[in-house]
Length: 150
Image 1 (cartoon, one colour):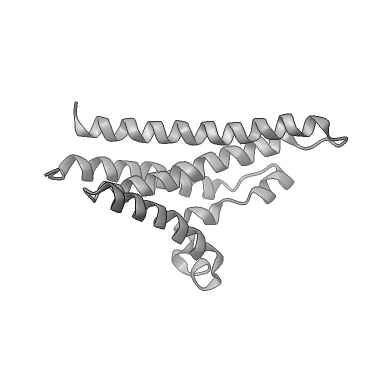
Image 2: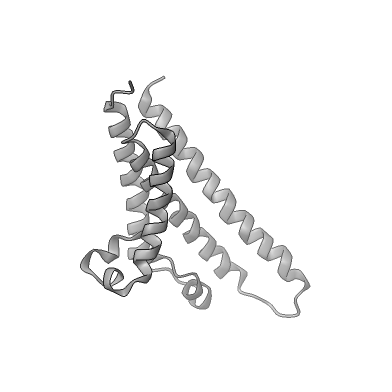
């Protein structure tokens, strides 16, 4: 088996797993609101779940990129988790969030309240999240394929 195909297989697992989680959350909402006397915009919530799926995949792809650089599982897991947490924290600190590089933070492009209220998604945000997904996975494939695994 080629190393690149192994990494792409893991990326596919991660993307599908993130999709299952986002879809399960939305289905739980659909089932849960059946007892409520009010109607919710469930299609808008589905759209928010779709963007959450892309956010999870983008963050996971960044973690794959980090993991491709290290041989030790514990270290790559810790740094991958740190990446997700640090990106979130930096997005809520105005000094970093409003900086010129703040727009590349995946968390900056996920506004579920706005999606539910308007039923619209910022296309630029989708592009950034998709770029993280494809760029992170692509870089992970290249790095892992060229690494000495010893």
